[in-house]
Image (cartoon, rainbow, N blue to C red; front, side):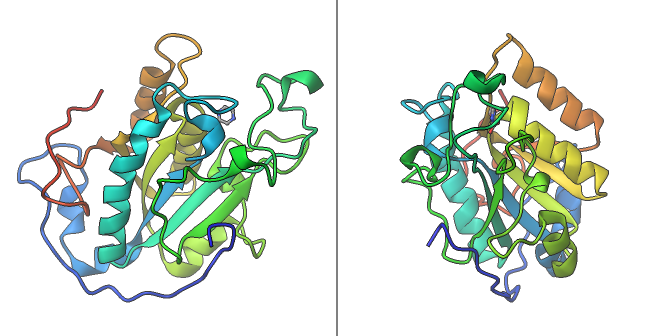
Amino acid sequence: MKEEGHHETRTVTHPDGACNEGVIESGCHDQRRMADRARSALLLVDVQIDFCPGGALPVPHGDRVVPVLNRYLADAVAHGMRIYASRDWHPAVTSHFKPFGGEWPPHCVQHTPGARFHPDLQLPPSTIVISKGDEPRRPGYSAFDGRTMEGKRLIDDLREQGVERLYVGGLATDYCVRASVLDARRAGLEVTVLGDAVAGIDLHAGDSDRAIADMREAGAAVTTAAECAFATEKASAVPHR
Ligand code: VGL
């Protein structure tokens, strides 16, 4: 199912107050109202086999985001939130890859096992898959470069659905998460980065920290399930980084 996009319209039925009081920079105050659920969507960036240990371009401990994201996914489903999952979806020959002048080893080549979502990621059938990086001359770091299975740009789908806030997790903090978050901010969306559900490559020491700083500077909030959620109150306290 994951290879097919769906466009289900879901109804918001679950207002709750899962946010802690007094949390700074969480965006929680905004989330109590029922209407906010409809305005919010979850974006999982590139949680693909090639970006996990054993893959072609592994993010160190990249697979650690999977169980955390599964909790966010369950809560997003419970709250009737729209769910997007982006994937790198490269042709075999692209200027993004080292053999063709690019920076990276070949990874996430279309229709190869490494391009699949992590097998433990519990994407609901309604997940909207966003494919990106399929143009041979564009790296496609940002999910906003991508399109649904029907060819619709992510931003157009978000606007049609009235989504104003994105919760973003996935891989890698310092590349595709960063690029997606910055594009979301440029598009005027409110953004909360799920700080306990991202992991970075850190090709240069500190890249992920700098990426987090860049995202904050662009106006994104960075939070964890412990601090704030549409997510569950059961989440344990995990300090960011
Ligand atoms: C990514 C490096 C190269 C990512 C993709 O998904 O963050 N990073 N291609």
